[in-house]
Amino acid sequence: MFERSIHLLKGFWRLTRLEHGIILIIAVFIGAIITSKNLVPLDTFIYASLSVLCIEVGTFALNDYFDLDVDIKNKRIDRPLVSGDLKPRTAFYLSCFSIPLGVFFSIFLNWICFLIAMVNAIISVFYDFKFKKFKFVGNFYIAFTMAIPFIFGSAMITTEIPAIIYFISLIAFLSGIGREIMKDVMDIEGDILRDTRSFPMIIGKKRSIKLSVLFYLAAVILSLVPFIVNIDEVFFNNLGYLIIVAISDTLFIYISLRMLFKPDFKNLEFERRYSLVAMSIGLLAFLVGPFLG
Image (cartoon, rainbow, N blue to C red; front, side):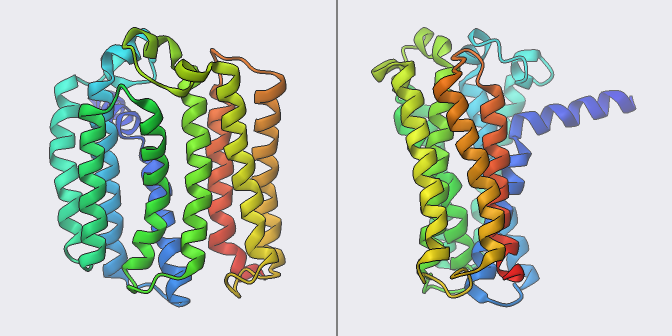
């Protein structure tokens, strides 16, 4: 019984990609702490975290529900609906519960946060339900969901969002697009089955890899700007920030070189996994870098 419970919990974790939810919560905290330059109110942060987490959980569950046939074609046995660990209706009911709940929690913040949560929820449902065949649109949508938590976290503190928050969001947006295009190259067989319009389907796998690298390198270049240009005094000439972000950038550059010179179009799992590591280290730079300067 205990082993079965653990197995189900692992299935729910894989269905909802909770590691992404944790990263989104950290992004919310970064947006809030940079904006407030002080302690963040605990109750406000809890409501904000629950809001982004619930929407993230529901969105990924709905994604797997609609993607089941494609994931089977792509042999994604890491997906619990494909492996049979969870039933499709479980994913559907979870999304129906979690997404509205995430919007509900945003009510306890302010009207801007509520608007952001509502728009994000609506776009996520429409994308999963209607626009799956246009994955190049989805690339930008997923990148948007990776960028908006910084603004959401800042908005829960003030309506006057600092310029550095928009800049951090742009970096997250660019790296997010790069990561999604890389995933599309991996998933091209399933996309062919469903006649999905993705970058690899339109411009080919090799050019898509180059495009993914271009977005990664753009994010790398922009990540150095706060150290060089006084967008925010906390990061300007801050060696602590520079050291940590340099680790993230080095990993992104290494991933990009592997993709360019040792491409394995059917298996980019190494690059995809470590791109998430690089993004997490980048978050760490914005989170603890200011305290090391």
